[in-house]
Length: 261
Image (tube, rainbow, N blue to C red; front, top):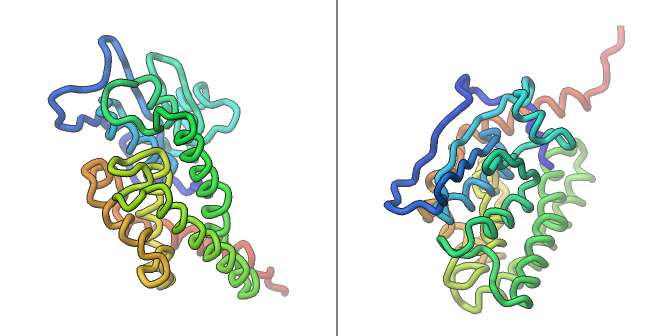
């Protein structure tokens, strides 16, 4: 996962999120809490899913340098965000959380995964592709310190984008999203990185989804950004730029050779 160990600037821990919907997905007695950290795209995944499903939830901002007892009790294995707590029961890891939300609140709000087993398998395939083939090299482009390493990770990222462009063409069948007319599982997974995509464009000038090379993905990103759920939870890009710059500075300092006396 992305190194998100620099604590956020918020001093307050807890925010309550309601979406302005007249009908919420929560059943009587449901209590939903999300433990997260503002900069994490993995947390944004969970927030997007909750809002798309219409689930009322309480968001708790965690200081990762000073983790709360609730957080440590809820995710003692990985100690990473996000953590979803539903009626006192913790669910960890963002992809697991997305599927849990889709199943626990089935029948209310749009389904993230298709009902058809084959279509569901296809969605999971492309979700795994994003997670395993796109995100790792893209993150490393901004974390390496030599031109040779950067060139190699850039090559792998470009290849992954080319393949994903074709994946969107096949999955969307000419419609707006990976899920067709409606936002689906792959859309949420990929959409969660949009603020970071825009931030890295500002930092480096490089576009992950260039309209000239990946027109479908470029148009998809603009379309996804206009969703009410996305507008509600996306981080401020300038703030992400500042945060990412701090990470890069820390990595550069760590890689610099020690001075000699």
